Image (cartoon, rainbow, N blue to C red; front, side):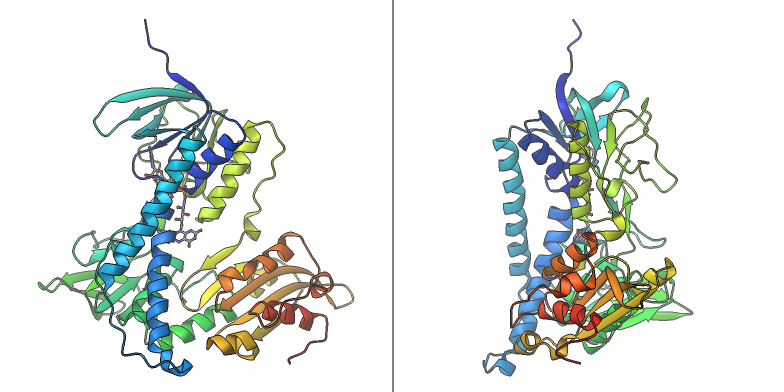
Length: 469
Ligand SMILES: Cc1cc2nc3c(=O)[nH]c(=O)nc-3n(C[C@H](O)[C@H](O)[C@H](O)COP(=O)(O)OP(=O)(O)OC[C@H]3O[C@@H](n4cnc5c(N)ncnc54)[C@H](O)[C@@H]3O)c2cc1C
């Protein structure tokens, strides 16, 4: 007798933010779920991304605070970094969160399979365990959530001083000289971390500016703050190769014959979708020329009942976008009404110092999209809480649609840079996604003294009046 494959309502291949959140969300609705993962639960985000990178940034913040303790009347000696402790602390946080997902899966009766999942015809998923044994399962619906891996560039192979985010997050020491190749969000977070910990940091970026997607006023604040930290920023330069120095470091060659010495080179030039092990033979799932699984706005692939979400598809590579796509898919499999994700309005956050957060288009982007806009911006230096914190770099900027009478109407974009703005975005995110007008949001009261008063003050300015000029 041919053994029949175990049948589930829903099978997720890949247990990163897309897969594990979808599995837990579906299970909370009573769905019989299987979750296939070849490595650790939590995926990139928990193990090699968001969480460990922010743990490092928090250590950098503590170092910064102790260095400036005297400004607050606290006399402390010059701080010394023991990064092995930082690494152990980070790993404890990661292990705790990964264990939490495992416990939640158990509690909600999600069946976890440890191994590589391959999708074949008729929703059959073959799981190959680390010992080579295989198990076959099927799902009424299958979700591909295999995520992404770091990209590399020619002439830079991983090993020794050449690192991707994966290796950097395993460091237990602070390199003296760090070269970051790529000035996007991940590159800037590492640049900020190591600069605050005392490394000599150089950023090499091929495009004309770092953080290219950002509103120009916001990006300008980050650049000025990085320069205060002595970060050396080279834009519009190609990185050509490197020559190891025989002592564990290397010399990076860039631009027109320029060189920079490094003890660590962090390649952060983006991430590529990881469909490599998914099989997909005999299925209608299509992969495009850049490796992304092709989906429609409901995350449906070309195969009926097979969906793809998260970094595997060509949507913003953010953990919370993976969560949103997971919910979108689960609702559809439950026969519920589901709204496609509005990708141009998702919240974005970069946790470098100063932090950056936004939702909706920046000024240039809104104008390029054909909007006639009214803009207001306010600096953190006039905010009392920012003064108390001693964190004066930054601003809030609001982009509103200009009404026919010339007054600002609907809020299109909210962009912030400065202290704890990643925690302050929710008001702006709500305004953008609720399609609220300036007059409506101006009615809301912000508590005093808070950093969020800056958002309120900026909205108020758009009404034509304010407290601070
Ligand atoms: C350094 C860094 C910092 C980041 N910071 C942030 C941040 O602050 N905020 C934010 O929103 N995003 C951040 N990101 C991005 C975020 O990590 C990703 O967007 C998110 O992890 C994508 O989730 P995912 O579920 O699509 O894929 P992943 O998290 O990549 O998970 C995919 C999982 O699938 C598994 N897998 C792959 N193929 C198979 C297979 N065939 N069978 C079984 N298992 C398989 C992999 O082992 C992996 O565990 C960061 C990323 C990095 C690298």
